[in-house]
Length: 314
Image 1 (cartoon, rainbow, N blue to C red):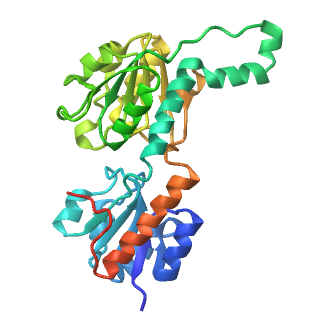
Image 2: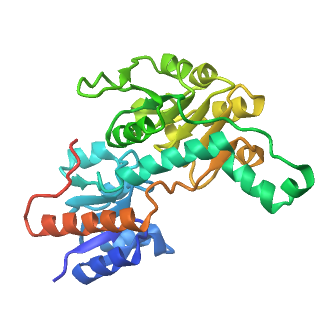
Image 3: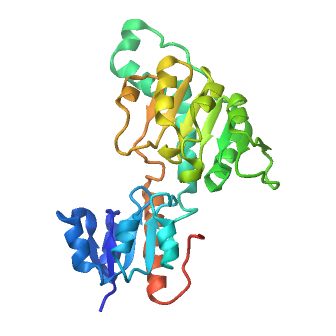
């Protein structure tokens, strides 16, 4: 008999087809009665497939007494109850590396779009304002500016290499200095923000980083500074961010993630100095396909009794 798995959220057709070929798949997001579905399949479920945004809570983990593995379609694990998973000795896998380049690319794209006002420029042409009003107001250059990276992990390092091509002065903050990296380490986030034109968030989410980019950090970044976030919305104090943008004490923002997705503060919709994306940094055919491959391969390895390809280290 095929192993039975629970899918918390949908994935691309290629992944769905592979999983439905290898397993009996129960789709939680399609259930009209989620609790009823969980109760009916609880003892049969041995694996879970989810994504980094939805994750899996302790209530669902606890409802599945024979759960062995949680395969996550993404690198963020802050939405997964890792404490419960660890206590129950449930393996967790993620999809690192394969999405790194695309997330770093998105950070660069948001940086350029927010600084050069690309979205506003597009509207300026489409609305015939160029023909009626003449030249659009001047914007700010990117080349040669100072960039502060919050979290020098895989994405942070890939981003730093890209920023070097723009002749930018790159500094970073993290839990500690990384001696093998050529960039300046700044232990204090507020100081990093004060010395940056662009503050770019690539850190991991979770309780430790929650709202670490607060009002004081945004004030230090200042009226000529730009915040870019391609990590997790929880890392930024969203109320403070909206207030700073509305008051003009923060210059601009490029945001791919939000605190309560897919709900975005409506105040941001009215601001021309903000570029918004729907949590789509890894949203390329290439990345999502490779992420899906890792989901399939990790589950296959587990049920074959082989080592996991990309286990998460608790």
